Each structure stands twice: as C-alpha cells, then as structure tokens.
Amino acid sequence: QVQLVESGGGSVEAGGSLRLSCAASGYSLSTTCIHWFRHAPNKEREGVAAIDGDGTAHYIDSVKGRFTISIDNAKNTLYLQMDSLKPEDTAIYYCAPCTVVADPDAYDWGQGTQVTVS
Image (cartoon, rainbow, N blue to C red; front, side, top):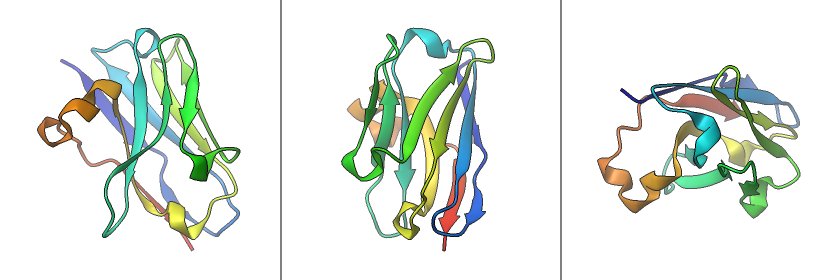
C-alpha cells in the first residue's frame, strides 16, 4: 500500500526557513517523479516543485532560488528545503506522485503539513 506522510511544517517569520519531509512507504521515490504541492486559502492548489526519476528538479518561478527539492534514497524520504520564506508561501503543503495531476480530485491528499509565514 502506497503511503506518503508529510511533516516539518510550522510558523516562521518572513525570511526564515523550514524543511518539509515526505516519508514514503510502499513506493520507491528514487524511480519515479514526485511533486510538492501547496494549497493556500481561497486559492487553487498548485504544484511547487517536482523531481523526476533521473533527479532533475523543476520549480515554479515564485520559488526558484528559494526552495530546493531533494530525495534521500536510503530513507526513501522526499524533502523541500524552503529558505527566504514569504507570507505568500503560507499554505498546506502536500507531496504526491506527479501522475496525480491527471485526476487530482481522485487522489487522497491526506492532511499535509501547514506552513505559516508572518
């Protein structure tokens, strides 16, 4: 059974940093594409960063240079290092396979992890 569990969120001041984790079970992160998404109040869910099976990272423009996506294959854990945080980064953050974009409403998004920047 595939399970992805996010953690590491919190409340920080603008300019601060957080590192989010996504622990995977029943699913090898090293062989496929996986995505960090975020969902802010009154906004559409958006993909923030993704990493392909070959290790290539992709970011939306608003987080380039501030966020870094990575995988620890030994721990089968995905990370999102977030630096120079801004209030507009406030959202619930989720990890999910990239394939979820085909039918996001059918995916069990779980609880995610809350990031609040003030």
